Image (cartoon, rainbow, N blue to C red):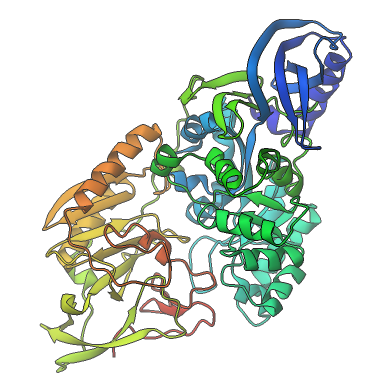
Length: 616
């Protein structure tokens, strides 16, 4: 691959060559002979098929023996059923926590050959390098196709500061590369609908820039379940939603014209519900991964697991495959390149030994075999990630215990404190009376009250916001957990039973460039390194998984507080999902963000902008 591959001129030159290969005037690189091939345009099988491939693309598809040209090699794969390379309609590769060259090594054996990358995670960290980052692995030779969608949530709300993208930036992204397919999930619904919201004009400038380029505006309609708001969301021109949790919600959104992207968490329930409702045309539906860590891929699979889920829910395999091939390709306007095994498209195929169980025998990408069974057999290109990618934690100095103290008013023995409870989306925060000792407001483990902090990792001003949270931290003394993945702004978060342990954890994390740090009873007991943007590591996923398993094992030795919450995925034990508790999109209301002039303590109602002290 090269820089040229990403240009329209390269595309035009290659397609003129493909015409000659199809007509037999130029030799194909490979003629692949298959017993069965799924035509995703019709959901019908083609028997005894020849596929002529040239420079990583399909040039010809027809019955066995019908190709009139020559090929440099002929390869037969009898006994297998072939489908197109599987695509991700909405995924954050950052949530795999490996860089794109190692993401390819991780997911290609699972059939995933192309990804629409929702880049508001990386874009919040290094917005000016969004395209440089997502194009680097492909330019170095990676067979995974990544179609970036720059982030709309940069910053996630008007009440968070730091990285900033607007319509001017979006126009530049879309003009710089034909592989940019649209605008990443628009999630700040209060700003979209509220003309007085400070982020209103910024978001609409990005939407207008996307439409100007005839690209796709992706949506995030979490918590939008009533018909007036669903209709308003669809009326905005936002094209999709991947946040439906029930069949009723998904059906309402489909009937409002939204393209529905189903995640695996409640996917089986939604698909069964849509079947029960008599859905006949599934062309407005796709399966989405969204966030899936590498360790989860090892345990359950990638896009292939989504397909198995859909088949188990009752969809015919052919329709299930369409939900991860032609449907997302049509939605993202990528059908000239992906979604089918057809002339001009990338020569990406998944060869199955069993269709019903979706058992993958091998995967081809760019016209060559890249996996055998679960093993990736292609080379992983070396990408020398520069400082802008690897030096992203800028706290400014080592923090001390005093940076995490919550000062009490003079002479007080108790203070009233605002308290948040993860994934319990109430209109107001909770209020507790908290004890004061040595001039500082104290935790109260007897009531499951611990301290949670956000550390600004961008300004270099050592800014820390801190408050008390309910049922989410360690009960053990001198224990803390911190991470540089904090959706979606990705400031560092830390939860702990002592200010000293929190300072030790954050300083350790900053020194290694990001990741996870667990301090237990005053000692650092586990570290996971995310040295790229504080979100990913440039290492094989197996190495990352080993570190994560060590973190989980160390976490099992900690006594964690727990309070049941609304969110069904908030569970006892190691509180990994605190990384998502910092979200500021709908349906979140009160939340803790990095300190700013608008909210000096960081506590802000993210739908209205109202700020409030953490103690009084």
